[in-house]
Image (cartoon, rainbow, N blue to C red; front, top):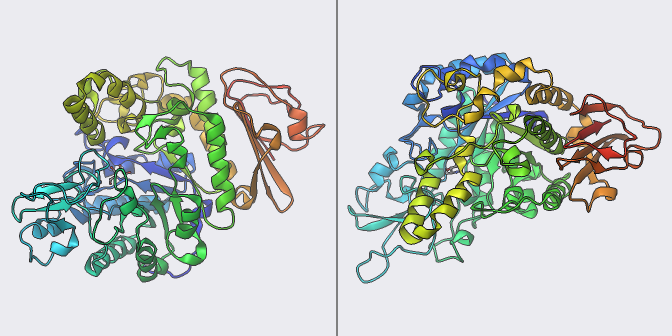
Amino acid sequence: MANPVKTRWYKDAFIYQIYPRSFCDGNGDGIGDIRGIISRLDYLEELGITAVWLSPCYKSPNDDNGYDISDYRDIMDEFGTLDDWKEMVKGMHDRGIKLVMDLVVNHTSDEHEWFKESRKSKDNPYRGYYFWKKGRGKDGKKPPNNWISRFGGSAWEYDETTEEFYLHLFSKKQPDLNWDNPKVRKEVQDLVKYWLDLGCDGFRCDVITYISKVEGLPNGKLLGDDMFTHGPNIHKYLNELNREVLSKYDCMTVGEAAGVTVEQAILYTGEERDELDTVFQFEQQTGNAIMQIIPLKVNHKRTKAIFSKWQKGLYGKGWNSLYLENHDQPRCVSRYINDNPDMDDGLRKLSAKMLAVMIYFQQGTPYVYQGQEIGMTNTTFRDESDHVDIMSRNALKIVKKYAPFLKGFAMKTLQKISRDNARTPMQWSAEKNAGFSAAEPWIKVNENYTSINVEEAKNDPDSVLNFFKKLIALRKGNEIVINGTYDELPIYAESRKIYAYERVWKGKKLTVVCNFCAEDVPFDGKAVFGNGARGRVLLSNYAETDLNAETLRPYECIVVG
Ligand code: NOJ
């Protein structure tokens, strides 16, 4: 029910992202589903998380695993029914867990009724729901402008019926909605209200920075991004959605904000601006890859600088999202630490814990992606056919067509950054198919499931999972973490090996120290923690911690407060 009191609960939330296709299969067809999620609610409660972000579960032909929606008001057949969804929300709410749905409204599926109508004729009432344009060239068969789809190739598709092109910034089965049309904006408002009234508590807004395009859709620079990222009416449209619907509920929003700068994030998330509550920035990812396509060698100094810039920049002016993984990114241990599948297991556990400490004691809303809490790693692609994701398959298609000699390079690159790395089934146990499903899963299980899985982690007091439980409990309600200032300790500001920062609130302090290296590094414990060791060790990934130590051990992390 509508509730105008905004508690801003997201500031003290710990959000767990579920990618439903890969989380847990409840009906034995090899595909994760809502009944599977219901069966794991106790697990989520024990972990201590306070909200779930559920990737799309609406009706979809699954060209992009649910990010192509054909009916916004119903559940995908493979995932279950609306009644299952209601039971799931009730189960979550009974456990004090909120539900954040995925709002995918930059585009629909081409199988959505609106698009089916729209493509019928130029004067169809739904024509203006999308972007239709005449082609260029004598025969009108050249795309109307130079914009490139995120999944490769032109962002325009020719449609025989009316001999015009339609715009799709993603796959050709994901036509872009025209937000300049007030009817489209009203449709979005209505569907947002529909889910809020059914009990959902907020939205992760898919590629929200793309919804406003420059009038006339002119050519842009390079891939055309400057003509559709943070477009001319973006703030007006978000403000309208907030005013008309979101402001009337105690809900939260997080915008997926490709290309966002600190200055822009303040405009999106400033409390008095009534647009979004928080955004996912991508600078931390592009610091590791060019345009998220070509992986770069991780440079910890750069990573630190990016985090510090966002922490300092949004303090008191906006709100950060703290994440290292999601369904589009590689696993963080593989990306930041070591992508050798034979990595030593002790080091894997130490580094997974260290990365968690590094990110989650900063200011913002923390997100943990399914499997991150047990330290899952990238998978191994043995063969081209192991790639399931549309983005990877398209990339391989393009390479094979235009530069077949680059195929080996493309395979190596995909090994590092393919989105499928994060989409392999959740590893519940050492049983067949990692306990994810009784049937052959829709995507191959990571080969390491017999040693990395929830059952094993539950029984190991030293596991990444048990560390996450402690960390989440420690963070909950902690005023210093929620409100405190953030500063890197000058002594290690230039270090590539050590990340040390402190948070201060009302005279109380938390100090966080992380070693990025697989070996001992010299460290001045006395200088960092104060002579004589004041403050308690609140969390650490070694059994014993000496605050006067002169070295940090491999991937050691310490939180003192
Ligand atoms: C961002 C989503 O996270 C990604 O998985 C999807 O492919 C695109 N948006 C298109 O919806």
